[in-house]
Image 1 (spheres, rainbow, N blue to C red):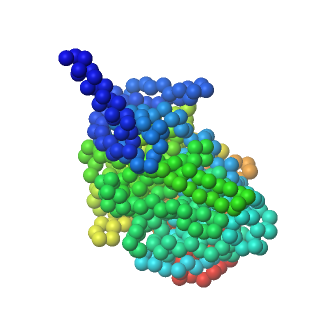
Image 2: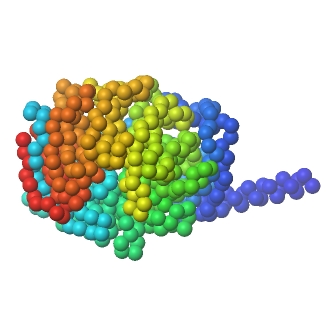
Image 3: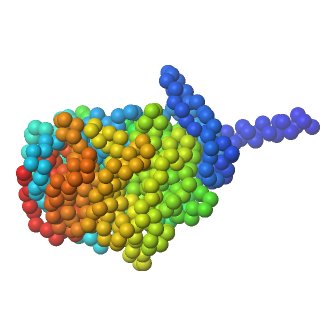
Length: 561
C-alpha cells in the first residue's frame, strides 16, 4: 500500500512539472512569523544568503507566466518557488549621455546629467513650443518628465531625424509625451523639431523612457482610453513604427483600469523590462530584442510574466509610481498605500510594509552601508479632505520602517479630486548635499500652499524648510556645479519655476511660466526641460539652458541668460 501511495505522489509531481508554466498558478502565500531578507555576498555564483527578519502583513500572491514564457526560465516560479535565474540590475543603469527614464535610473535618484555653470543664478527663458489639445488638456501632466539623450553617432545616422541633425555635432534630442496624445522630438539647444511627432491618439500623462543600451527604442504608457484600447507601447526610433502593444485590459488583473502612468526599467544586461500597471499587475518582460545596425532594423518579441497580489486590509489596486530596483529586488507602492519588495527572478514577495494612504510618488533608493533604504511618502486621499502625509524611510531588505515624519495636508474630494500630500518624488542629496533628502509636499496645512523640506538621512531631523505660497506635484531636481555645490529646481501649481540653494533652501530666483507645472523637469548640462499644463512649451536657462514642453495656449519664446 505504501508503495502505491508513493508511486501516486511521484506521478502527480512529474505531471505538475510537465504542465510547467503554461498554466496560471494561484498561490495564497501567508507570510510566516519570519520572512526572508536578502544579503548579498561576493562570489562567482552570486549566491544569496537568507536571514530571518520580522514580517509585517499577510500577503496573497498570484504568479502568472504567459503561455509563451520560456519553460526553463519559469519552471521554479510555479507555486512561488524561488527561481535561481541570477538576474540583477547593473550598478550603473546606462553609459549613454542623458536622462533616459523617470528620475534617471533604477534607484530613481536623479533627473540631471552633467554639471551646471551658474554665474548670475538666474532663470531666463530660452525657447518654447505649443502642443495641440485633447480632452484632458494640453502640454504636460503628472509625471510628464521628458527624456533627453545624446545619441551615439552610429545610431543617429540610421534614425528618421532630419538630415541636418545627422550632420550636427553633439546632437542631443529631447523627447516628450504630451496630454494631446503625441510624442514630440526636439533639438535641445534650439527647440527645433527633429522628426515628425508620433500620435497614439490617447492622452499621455506619464514619462517616456529610452533604452539604456542606446538602442533606438522608445517606451511609453497611456493615461486615458480615448480610442477603444489602452496599454503600453514600444516604438522603433528608426522609422517611428510601433513594435509592440501591451494591453492594460487584462482579465487576470483584479482591477479593470488599464492605464500606465509609471515608467519602466530596462535591464541592459538581460534584455528585460520591469513595469507596474494601474491594473495592479507587476510585469516582468523578456524583450528578445533583435537589433541590426548594418541592416538598420530593430524588433522585439516580448515574453510576459505577470504578478498579482492581494494584501489583507488593502482594497485599492493600482501602481501609478515608477518601479525602483536594487539588484534583484523591485520596489513599488499602490493606491492603497502598501509598499512591496518582490524578487525579480522568482516573482516572489520578500516583504510588504504597513499601509498608509494612496502612494503615487516614485520611491527613491539610497544605499547606506550596503543596505538599500527607501524614501517614500503618501498622499491624503483615503483619509478624506484632511489628513497626514506620512514620510518614511524603510530598510529595503527587511521592510522595517526606520524613520517616519508626518505633515498635515488638505485634499479636494468629489468627482474631480485634487490630492494633497506627497506626489513629487524626493531628492537624495549628493556631493555637498550628501546626507540630506528633500521632499516637496502639496497642500500643506492649507489648500493652496506647499512645503519643501530637507531632512537628515541619518536621523530624520529637519535641516531647512521653505513654506511655498503655491503647492506642487512636480518633482524637484538637484543640480551641481563643478565645485559640488548643489541647487534645486522646483515648479509649482501657478506655473512658477524656482531656483533654490540646496544647502539652506534659500530662494535664489523664480520665473513665471504659463499654466500649472505638474510635470517634472529634466536637466542636461546647462539646460532644463519641463512642461506646463495648459501653457506653452518653454526652454529656460540660468546659465542652465532649460526646455519646457508646455501647451497649446502659448506662444513660442526664447529664454537665455
